Amino acid sequence: MKSLCGLLLAGLILAVAGCATPPPPPTRLESANVLPLDLNENFQFRKVQLFFNDPDTYQPTTSETINFYRKYLNYGAVTKHERDMLTGNYFAFFWRARERADITVRLEYRQGTLGNQVMALEQYYPGAKGSVKTEFRVTGDDYFEFGQVTQWRVLLIVDGRIVAFRQSFMWR
Figure 1: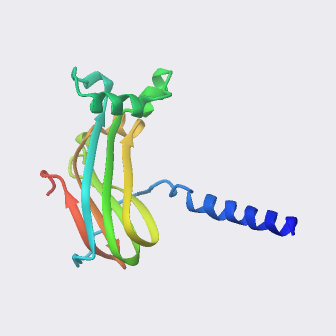
Figure 2 (figure 1 turned 135 degrees about the vertical axis):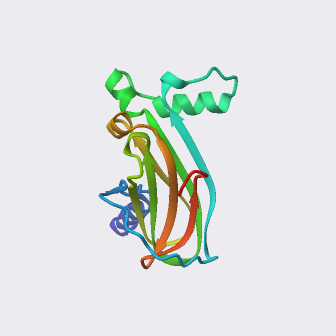
Figure 3 (figure 1 turned 120 degrees about the horizontal axis):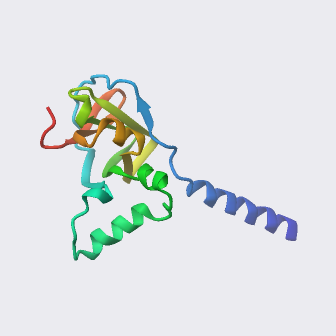
């Protein structure tokens, strides 16, 4: 009886640990392909958070929220190289799917020195339903080599079609 309870407990722990695993890192695309637009009200972006982390451009502020987030992003970086790898643009997109679907979230963006060249990052969510937060960042070598993100748009893609999107004011 004790061994059965031990097995059940071990199975429960493994099941809960499996649910808590973070998603794999975003996939970098060589080029962003053009997809058809098929907007669907069952998929929508709820909120967008943007943050530019460059200690050289910090303005003094009394905002506890901004000061906390700056410290949170740079926590643990001791050497200059570690701090440089955290410097750049951070994006957090909150979205909702009212029906279960295999969803790809794609961030397409342009950087200062690349002109009109579009870069892209993707995150895949198999069988997604409900409210989800997706985070992307353009930091470190990408930021120092190509500059700050100047324009962006984020897409929810289902079956090769764009079902929802948000974009920066400057996107063209």
